[in-house]
Length: 307
Ligand SMILES: [Zn+2]
Image 1 (cartoon, rainbow, N blue to C red):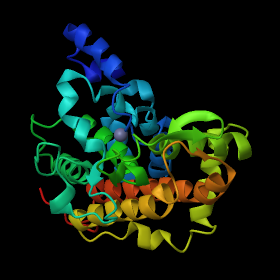
Image 2: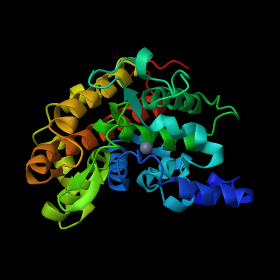
Image 3: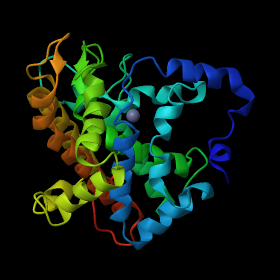
């Protein structure tokens, strides 16, 4: 099955498809850039045990050769297609301005108030869908491949601090500024600019080198003693609540702090934020692996997810 076949069913809807592209330039909250999502998924896939590894390979379309990261940006590509428009609010969370906390009941809804329609709710939902795969009770309402891709993508998004941002500025999207000499906005600085600057300043624009550095930091480097606590998860609801809380906390302390519209962010901001971005990518990857190992593994270990 080819990638497009898997996505299927849109072929009669070329106008919608094209409109989707036009709308991609709408609200810019795309989540980590493709680099951020790719690294999150590569980190996760490298940490999978044999059962999870096999399940992931079985669920992926053949043409990606078992590489989960090849499709981790797919949910950003389809979010404005008619069929998938309902997924658009699932990439982020709007929290009250300057409150700097996340309350699931208070904040996890779409703009019409529909419950669970936020990135934290989406992770819970797609995790429980995937549990049906192991149980062999997958029903036709759920497409397990899509559930895997959505889960993998949203685990990246929930760790991007500005994806759990303030409501009035749309997670920094409306805060226009300059990143060094280029026009950007605060959201995009965290989605992509910091990563691209790191790649060009320190890693010869080679994502594999950056990825190795991140993986080195948690295997036997500065974060190695933190990994156990990153992975800790008793139940998926309290975990997504914790992770979203971490993001808005970082957004307040490091994202928004000292930033005004029209400003120019450069070396000071970059130097003090780069390691935070890398750590969030690492945490997203380690925790995605934890969920997939728990969902697809043989053992009953791991968290309890509502089904
Ligand atoms: Zn996203």
